Every structure is written in structure tokens, then in C-alpha cells.
Length: 236
Ligand SMILES: [Fe+2]
Image (tube, rainbow, N blue to C red; front, side):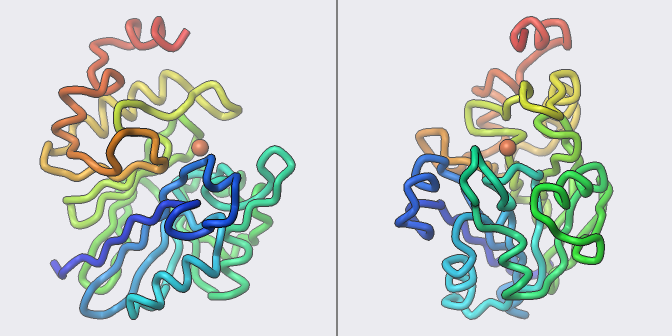
């Protein structure tokens, strides 16, 4: 497998610097690609499309696709409490690429962003997206939303969206959230991945921007739940 190109960008700091809501929401956006072919994908392009395109361009990378972890407007653009967040619609107007979305999330994504069916690649869990010689595996992790997905890059980096945070996990009390599914996604899917994997979450909510899954399996309460009962008591 090829040399990975990987960048973690913090909205409100690395781009969208003048946007006070971006500063507050602390979303991470990721560029993932192949160092040799100079092609990349962007994960959750929101807040400042020009800024993101510039970041890729400065690294000499060509954007060839977009990945959506889930359909919330702070990740894909749309109306957030009445504030219009830039996102996929503007990106596709600037750079016509496909948006890879879990099939359970596709209709919701279209509603939130106004994209058409032809803009989408509906993905299933286990699908692999090839970018040069780098491979991105889609892992369906419902719970925060019905079609939330995580991206495993070359088996060594996990981009976890709002499913798993460092020392936390995504909310399950928003529309489409499901505590039982979140329990299964965290304990049956993500906690079963190898310890060496680096965890890159969707928000900068912790005292560090990245850690290992092994460290989180030890220290993240939400990955350590022993039973669904215990979990539902915690969530209830
Ligand atoms: Fe979210």
C-alpha cells in the first residue's frame, strides 16, 4: 500500500478563521490521499470551502472525492440553528466530485444539503474506496445518526466522525439517534479494531487532537461498557 497523505484541519483555526460559529463548533476536517499520485479525498467539507480547497492545493493535491461521516450541517453544510453553513453544495459547484455516503444516510444528506442523487455514491459497510494506492474502508456505525460511518485508512487511521470522540462519544438524543445502535457500533465494531490504530475524531473536544484506539479502549468509558443494560442506564 502507498504512502498516505493525511491532514487534520481544525475549523476556526486552520481555516474558516473569521467565522465565530466555526470557532465554537471545533469541527475537524480531513484530507486523505496518496502522496505519489497527489490525489485526495476530503472528509466532511464544511465551514469554508475555499479555505479547504486552498489547503489541498498548497500541498499540491488534487481533490477527487468527498466523504460524509453523517448528515449534520456542521459536517456537510446546511442550516444550523438558522445559520447557513457552507458545505458540500458549494464544494460540488467548485469541484465536481462524488460524495460517498452510507446508503442509510443518503436521503437525509440530500435533504440537508440539496444535492441530487447523481452527486452521491451510496456506500455500504465494508466498501473500500481506492485513492491511488491508499484504501479507505467505510464502516457503518449507526447511533448518532442512522447512517453514520467511520473511515479506516490503510488499516491504520480511523476517522470517526461524531461516533467516537476522545474520552467521549456522539449524542444519541438528537433526531435519528439510537442508544442501542450506538452501543453496538462502539463495543461490537470500533472496540474490536486493533489497538495501534490512530483515532481522529470529528470534533476537537479533548485535550489532544489524536490518540490510539488502544489508549481509548483503556480510558474511554463509552468503549468499556460491559452490557447494553449498563449502557442504557448511563444514557437514560
Ligand atoms: Fe453530528
